[in-house]
Image (cartoon, rainbow, N blue to C red; front, side):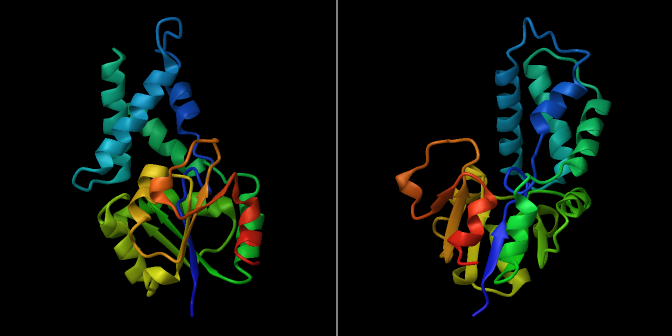
Length: 221
């Protein structure tokens, strides 16, 4: 029976440097003496998550609108060029150091695929930066929905021509990936806990690794 290892991209495979990039883009307007940077970035993160729960629109639009709302919340002037700069930066992000070798090892036994909350044109360059051929790259743009919406995963299964029981899903994202996949009947789920966060017994079973380096051994490669 075919088995496919699927991955979230940003934060799992790709070092998604959105926070530092945002601060760099806004450096001319950030009053670091009066702005709680961590709170600002957290608000930006929350607003991106709220946006993907709404009716589908392209990810580059979500980056623009979420940044604009976060900046307004903190009394910062928003310019369209801010969002443009952020969108332009996303395709430049490369993989975490251990990712290419781990993926090459996995390909000796499994098909590999990406299921990502991204636009086709944004993720394409990130995949090039990884430097490993994927059997499938499935985006929110193709699905017309974002994770954690079940539609995104169902579209992926249909595209890959597999049942959920043939899929091992690997992701860092908790609310985007591990919460919605608990009841999908996947063969296995692996949490890449890069940031040492607490897990939850409510969403077991899942395996937990600190990065991708141990995944080939875990999956018998």
